[in-house]
Amino acid sequence: MYEPHTLPPEYWIYLPFQTIAYAHGKGGTGKSTLSSHHSAHSAQVFCREAAAQGVEPLRTLHIDLNKQGNSRQDFGIKGTALDDDGWNLYKAIIDGEPLVPIRDVRPGLDLVPGGKYLQKVVTNMPGLQNEEGARANLRLVCALLPIAHLYARIVIDTPPENLHLQSLAYPATRFVIVPTKADSASIDGLAEVAERYSVAVEMNPALTLLGVVLFDLERAAPKIEREARARIDFVLGGVVPTLKARVCHVPSAPIEARQRGKVTFELEEEILKRRRPGAQVETTPVERLAGDFRDVFAEIAVLTEAIRQEEEAA
Image (cartoon, rainbow, N blue to C red; front, side):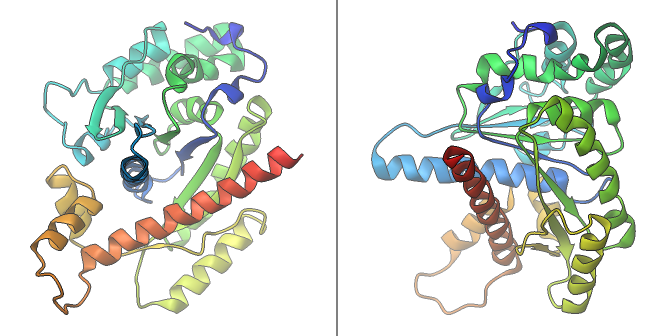
């Protein structure tokens, strides 16, 4: 196992290039929903591509660094024998025990769940920071490196309003995506994310603040969207792009999905299976929402690929 003081100087090259964290200092902006859907979509795409080529699929890892542990509901393991409420993640970060993801919560997707035991991480981090200084924030990196080679993509859900857990996430990721709602309080909170990023990049020079995603927008409110985009540019000084793709408001689908231990793509599959072939029907809200998610993740893939090409050409 690695220790913070024994990490290679450029440790980030041993993490998958496609390591992405969703972050915002305010709750309710879509971090958990987007991160769970990104992981599920990633696994679906990898499995589909592998099936077409007749090879083993690349794998995705989802890390839930949130005390709420919503990914347990999203992937249907909450309250089951697999649900450790964040115990393994806590022991890996604080005591250096091996990180052991739950394998195949969906085909090709492994999960490190969060939960109440992450409060123990929060409690212990001040003492570790006194002993180890800023390098204590590398403890999630230390836990990840022994298994990072198993994955083509790692997605990290970070908690709101918890500096200690966020400080563990930033050194362990390559890209940061910031979801926000269109209200002024959510958008103004982006300045705090940018401030934390500017500190974290000193430890992790490979870190990139990739972009902002508008979440839970009213689909038929273009004026609200234009004003939100303008305010985001003002708050962030125009240096961080706002993705063209956005996720619009669908009142019932996210609630139903989480209650049933599914993601929106799986609700969409159920609808398509029930639909008579060739039937001329209006697209359902669930299908539109699933399409929004796919558009966001496709744009993220384009942005990260452009950065990869730039780095290879340098």
